[in-house]
Image 1 (cartoon, one colour):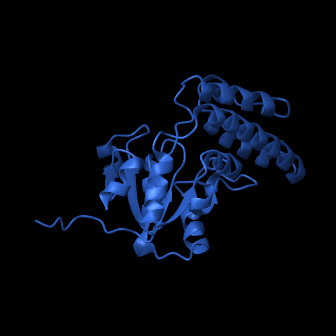
Image 2 (cartoon, rainbow, N blue to C red):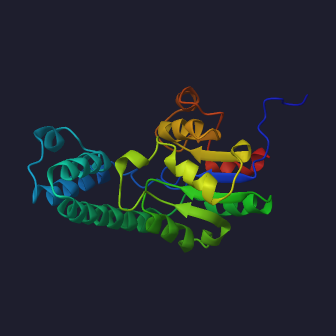
Length: 233
């Protein structure tokens, strides 16, 4: 009997990066280490609110908050200077980690299989574009992607997922039809962004969330991993 709920093959498939193609922060000490580096950098120029020192251990959350504090408290040129230094710290940190952990086994093969089916590929991430490009180039699949875009530079926290801005940007750049566009990700914010962009949201369970949680966040379908996508068609 034909499965009438089965999704049809898209013309364009865009994927997330961290916890979808790799797992940068599986080591639980890394995000707190990044948080300390970011606090140290900003602490040279501004008084950091006590709660950021004591309670927040996610380096990205610390960065986003202190970025906004710098924007509010300094002239634009000074805020831009400090925030660029922070961006450089985060990018270098990500690069060192991706050099260490690489991509999930099977990612290059899955990417090539998807391309062999005629699917155009893109990548949208909240990690640095240069870091994502490095990881793809290391396993010789960068040229398989029509579009690769990381977080906005200069950085703007309000423009990353769950804001649909990165996906809308990809849709325009790839001249893609929303009706034949999949966004694949591991996080609730990926599902929220995909639904806001009116594209198909495909969850994978290689991150922090279970299938049921991704479905609740708006996923149209959830698979075990990115590597399971080619065999779905």
